[in-house]
Length: 449
Image (cartoon, rainbow, N blue to C red; front, side):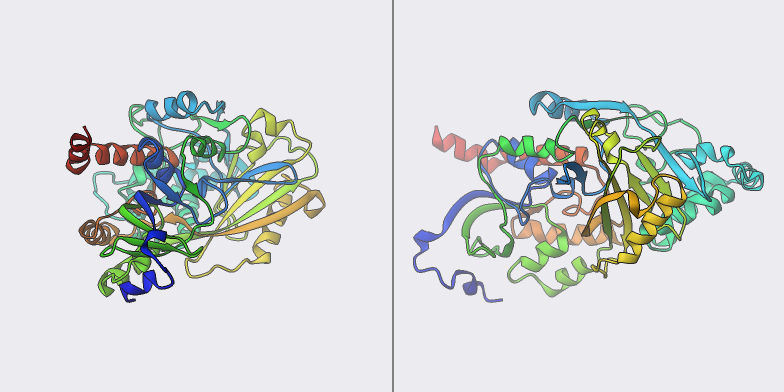
């Protein structure tokens, strides 16, 4: 694309808007950068509300999130920021998670509670695998790490089929540098000073009202310049001009992007073909997220339900109405079902929805479609960045290119890291501090004084 095309249709350069810093994307990371830059940024968001993957919606008077979310952090400063600085009223409670296995419901995580399964052959197979495991090895992929840490029995009966269902890949394709913060040990030996996987001891929080997106709505209230429905069409790093689908044109000093790297690279005018090719190689996972409103309050269900059953489409369900007392007390309740789909497919599949309802009925959680008052769904293209073996190398090359053209890329899909919203808030705050401490900003302050 010729850079001059960016300004076609502009009668006078005076019509171009000037922005010191443009932040692309109003998810947790983008909002955090804007908040900590103290009113010196313009935030452009494609959607009609803030929050990104953490946004909330309402169906039939019931609150839903884009997947199952909970407020849980190992960082005291994040908790203080959300609860004290933003003033979000968080309802905390002990997490109740279960696993659906061959029609039985057992506590999560499987590797600590498999002994409660009624099939004693399965139980003995898991014990046998634990006794025979070889933890002295240093695996470099998820398949081998699961075998080394948990043994063949636990791997065979749950962790292998569950992770294949979740990631939709053979497990030797995945690196394992992220596992310590995601998959609980067979014994509770995690360092409490570090982020650890959620387990039976975890206490989690959720906004008392408004859904998980309330955290980010409160944040947005303190940011002056957020523009919704502003999809970025092109970014010219030579002219330092950015255009949107709405027809707005900005002259910028700095661009901070939190959108998925392939989308960012594709929008950069003159991006080298090898960078475009590398960005397209980054693996990711998409979701079909089904939202169900039940006709009656749900009784006896957990906060989360995990399943490796290939006949039951979702890998995870969130019974979201149990997250806060306000939602629990409503006459209708919510169920959120996350189903992994290929990153090459964005088509809604009614069969997934029907099989989800049938599975919930077989498990005794609902009585079938007769108990469903309303149903909607959302297809999420970029849901989880997959940690393939080439990701770090690819991101190193892409970051080098982006740095050379003066663009920052940050966040879950901007850094291609499997991080939660609390880590994204930290990322954003840290980048804002780095910008404030940069030599050029210090020089501008000296000149102004």
